[in-house]
Image (cartoon, rainbow, N blue to C red):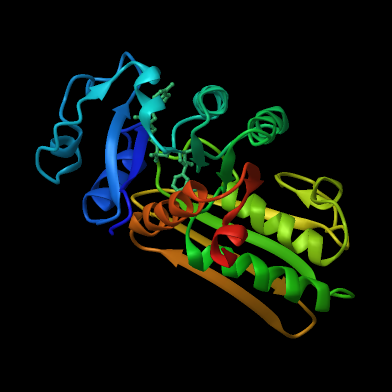
Length: 269
Ligand code: NAD
């Protein structure tokens, strides 16, 4: 007997990631798109989500009604922090699993996602690429080894549409480095430098941000030592990697117990 298809709902269906997810779902034999939504003001409301994503007509019209998502087994949300929190509350009320890839979340937003995860499986990850998930593990290990006399800087580049900085991935890499050194990132992060900054404080983790063109996402964690340098980098050239990782997370969430998960859980699962 073949397993039933996993029903997927996509809020933000008209967005860059929403359209990419719809393309990847169309190519996945075990997944079925059952709902697609966007903001009431979005031009795409009422359009066929498959046509908009470039896969051909699929009959799932883009709705402005979030309630249309509740028939899904898993809602995959790449929208905005406020929208993701609202969708997580709805998913928690309705008992449907969730994958949240939205970045720029505040501490309160993350607490709201964690609260929703008391009743549903919820995978939250600022970077759903398998490569970046492994990169963070490496960064934690290297940061634990290269301590005295080593300065850590994180450099990220993204396209000119990106609205938050540093990227959620850069912050997650900073968290990984801080974990490796057994410190809190908040206590050692240096986010902005301008003017008479004084010398670098030993132990700080610095962040630098580039924005321009159509860069999908590039991250480097650089360990500066005396007369040597270790650089660990990841370059995404197609946002399909984030969509494929999110679908892998959705398959995991569809079969998981309620809980707050990340991509490490998905790769281990
Ligand atoms: P985008 O602006 O192209 O798309 C966001 C879409 O969400 C838009 O269509 C917008 O109208 C829609 N939206 C906003 N509020 C909504 C609501 N209440 N209901 C339904 N739809 C709503 O942005 P994007 O490039 O697709 O990125 C979206 C988010 O995903 C950003 O936070 C981005 O940083 C993040 N992102 C994460 C990863 C990852 O690997 N986790 C990868 C790429 C992007």
